[in-house]
Structure formats: C-alpha cells, structure tokens
Length: 482
Image (cartoon, rainbow, N blue to C red):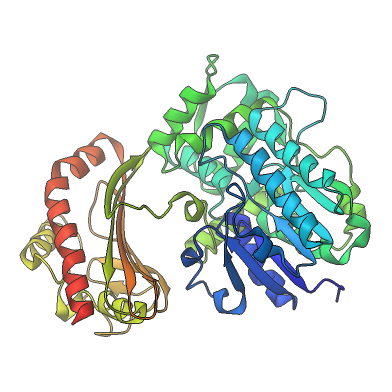
C-alpha cells in the first residue's frame, strides 16, 4: 500500500469521478469529495464511506476545508457543458485550486486531460484541457497529467454520441474529419486503472502520460464498428460542408445530449488524438488496454444489464432553484418539479416508493386508468402487471406499465415507461435531505421523442401531463407530511 492515505476527489458527481471513488475506497484509501451540491452524492452506494465537503473551485469556496490534511488530490473538473466561455472558466478554476492546494500542503495532484499534439492548432476544448494541466504543474506540487482521447464506456458522452448516431441514422453524413482524423479510444475501465495505480507509482510524478486503447481508428471507423456489433449497417455519404455548431444542433435533435456539450467535441475532430509514445505501457506494465471493439462490447453489456455506474447526465442536469421548470434540452424534454416537505427524506421515499399497484397513482386516477386502457387497445401491457409488493420496490421489477430502472434506498427511484409511446419516457422521484425534519421532493419526467410524431405527442398532450404532474407532487407532499 502506498504512503498516500487521505485522497480528495473533485468532480465527484461527474462521469469519471463517480466511478473512481469506489475503487479508491476498495484500495483502502480515505476519500473526501468536493461537490457544489453534496446532496447529489447522498444515496450513492459509497457516500457513507466518504467525507463530502461543499465547495466550488470557480468561486474559490470550500477549498481550504476540502484540501486540509489531504496528501493527494484528483482534479477531474471541466466546465464544457456549463459555460459557452468555458476556457476562461476552467482557467480561473484551476488557478484557484492550485493556489489552495499549495496553501494546504498537498503533496500530489493527479489530473485527467486531453490528447493533442503540442504545437498544433488545437481546438478550444483540447487547448483548455492542456492549459489546465500546465496551471496545475506550475503550482510546484508534483503533478501527474494523464491525457486521453475518447473514453468508451456505458454512459460516457462520446460513447452515447456514437451509439445514438448509429442506432438512429440509416444515412450518416461524413465530412473529411471523420475519414482523415485518427483517434485512439480508451475504455473507461483502463482510465480508472491508470488513475488508481498512479498513486503507487512515484515515478509518475511530474509526468505527462498519454493513455489510449490498443487500437487506432479514423472516426468513421468507430461508427462502422459499433454498427457491426449491433448488426446495423448505416450508409455513409460525403458531406463537405463542415460547421461544428450546426452539426452539434443536428446531433442534439436526434440524441438527448445538449449541443453545448457536443460542439466543443466536434471542434476537436480536426485534431488527431493518438498517443505519441508508449510511456504509459512501460510505466504500468500490469495494465493491458482494451481495443475499441471490446470496449464497446463491455459498454453495451453494462447497458443491457442495467449496471451503468455513472452517466454524463449526472453532471449536466443541475438542481434548479425554481420550484418548476420545463425545458427541451436539444432532444430530451424535461418536466422538473421541486417542493419542500416537512418530513424526513426516508418518509418521503417510503411514500413515493409505494405508488402504483392497488394503491393507484395518488392523483387523477381516472386519467392513469384511461392511459392504461389506450395502451391495451393498441397492443400494450396496460396496468395488468401491478407490483410485486405493496411497499417494497426492487430494481428491475415491473410496476404497472413501468419498469423500475434504478433504486437508491431512502433516496431515489427511476421508472422507465413500457407502455406504447412514440419515444422513450422515464419518471423519477427523489427525496433530498435538507435537515433532520425537512427534505426536498423532486419529481422529474423525461421524454425522448422518436421522430415528428414523438414531438407532437409530447406537446399536444403536455397540458394534460402538466395537470397530472402538478397534482401528483402536491399529493405526494400531503401524504408524506401526514
């Protein structure tokens, strides 16, 4: 075991950070998390084994407390999906963190950045990633900067873009960057192995380590290989007009990924993201990186088994200050509602986890019954399945015409619609502790429309949905407080 014992992980609500933490705990490290909204970490399977500190690197808040007594800190923060001017935002955040780390006497910083040949005209995204690494190294604290390209794994934004494009488009426009630019994708499991094992590798200090999988491909090949695995054969056609912003808007229309997230990634298509040396393989001989095809197969297996640990959405869907918000996030329509409840989170969870079956849907029962009848008449399942237990709910089991996709005890349930729909739908209930006697009830409906009819379905029926969702959260509040 290495000398390092107390570890700080920033970006704990993000895709990589959320997977890194349980692996560090498993290795025997004491892990502290820095999060702007700690309540988003409560209920994770590992949350009670960590120390969670509220803080914000950009606002320079909570850093002294978070870094106190820490021997090593992981910097896994980016602002790409939050700010159009994310480059300046990331610069200020890194400078604040580096200064606080020096003051706290931190002995090691580990950072995950992006591949890209120095000296080339890099995209804004890659340029910002590398500048952050330089700021951290300039602090004087021994720093390890890992540089990776596309990270392949269930729930990663790059993997999801590839997945949605191939699954939904029989014809894919192909610009020169897709055929000429090369990348070296890396599986998320290999990224995590490097991040964890470098703590025990003193020789990795003050190094830039480029990491990638065992295969190199043009971007077009990534799409084709995914199609082969899924028995899909999309046709590619030449499309010479290239505009990252325009293409981002197009992709966001057919995927649930916001264009503000996609555009910087598309700009990076102009740059080869391939490892320039094999230093990672020499320094970490025990890590045998997967090839792209195998990484995709592992990612798909996780999705089929409902075993996705983290996803890009966890860091992109923030807690809103308003009690109600309706947004259309470039392909994913969301009805998000919040209400304060004079009851502990455990009681609120017990209330909404008992919904359905013989108890019914608590509000506008006749509308739910009508929807079930329509579903049966159109060949669907209706509400014939009920629920297994009147009070206890488990992941994977049916609940009327829903499927329980996720359960976090005393915190959250996520239901996936299995009625006939022109798209995909989810309904999520979450109880967020505020203090010992009160909590926040969050109710979120997600709809991912399929084609034009999907959009018409959502917007034409939304007045009815709004009545139902508004009444439902009020009834859940009343029952929780009784």
